Image 1: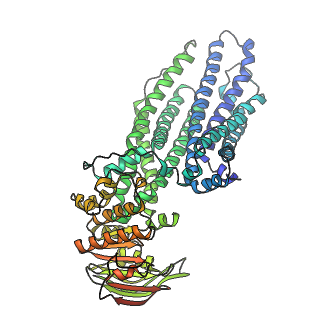
Image 2: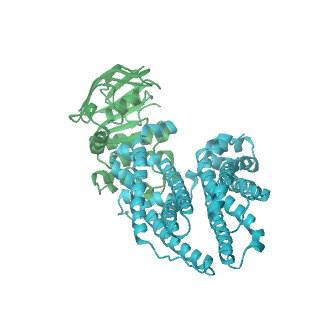
Image 3: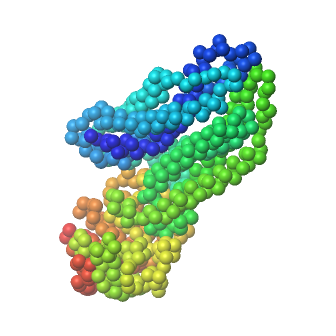
Length: 379
Length: 228
């Protein structure tokens, strides 16, 4: 087997993201399916709230499930590319020996295993917590019983597993379609290079150029950095604001999911960044660039993306909560009073700065450990 | 002046002894070849003399600075001010073009006149190319330019022709020797190629982590004169 079970299960990022998606979707969809047939039992007085709850369940499933599945797909594409970049010698040898791109790519379907693990755990936890979640979701006066819906198992666990496996297959197939020799030379070395034949001297300093090139060479990582900051900002602020709007438990849950997603994306982005730039870091250290210079040239370019993610997250959570309140509570007598919470925003910003500085500090220590000897051994 | 006194270095918690009681003196401006078979400890000796690694025991002094007492940060600063490197595998930064790779060295010492080095190494028409667009010999010349652009007082070369064919290797060696004559820095080259040793002034032969012979060539050969 070209891809081992161990490698497939290493895609923790996908598993965590889909765990969150499956967890939220399981209890909301189950609740939705259990509440839907009770419409006849709902009194005129309860109806607006009943419909508001159905709308909340639909909206939460669509947003959480949709966005997180999209993120998981991007992660899958990223992991496949990373795997091929790191194992180009083995894959090139297989291709040279006569393995077809189709056969090699088929083994990447095993990456769907991580999706299965994440979805199954999320689905299981969603069911385990269902009794307590039903308690605070159910409207007073309505008796909602928990029923098991087999279709959900297919929709929440099986479908994402197959879908992610197919995405991994397709992505791998497109990359492994190349001739064996091209694969053997390595993906990274095969990048299209736009050379300028002019001889005009470049006045940018090496460090500025290094910083710029690190960003342009790791465009996908800018997405994960932005997404990480977005999750941190949006979900902490949303979670904190939820407490006064709906229910404290819901707020804590959103906050926890936000932190998990933010941490996973940041970990993935920074680990890949240090890995991708290890040769540059080692050479800079060998030639005498200080730790500060090395770290700045690698990480500094990502700061604007982290700030951008925070700003988008802040605007998003405010927009979403305003929209939800207007949509869901429009027919309910008491529309909760909601306005942008500046205090929460500043507290989140402070937490954001402290957390991301601490995370970066861990990676700074990793950067300091990269040596030319390590690079020599890897080569 | 480089002075090493009773240097010991081992790996795997002392199990693998790589350098065993090495002592040597290298004068300023000398061209030294450290010659030895694979596993003789020559690359490790280069690493400890250049401050890439610390020796376990002994004393190393380079330009009156004792390396064995320096911490990692101080060693980095020492390399910045004194040392240049050329490696067998080039280690050029693949995403940067030739000029930017050379600036890695030049910017460290604020050398804005690196164009002269580019010209002398015959790289003027290649400065906007990326490493993947260059031949092995050209890549090695970029490495040499990168190292020289930081105006080192000591240049360390680890098998600089090891990955090149004979003709290209000869060309590269020729460039190295010419640049050494032009700039007058101390040059320490690690190689397993006996013939290359004939181009050096001082030859240090190593075997099993020990120096087995040090001799001086009265008449150094040029890169064109040696066999391969």
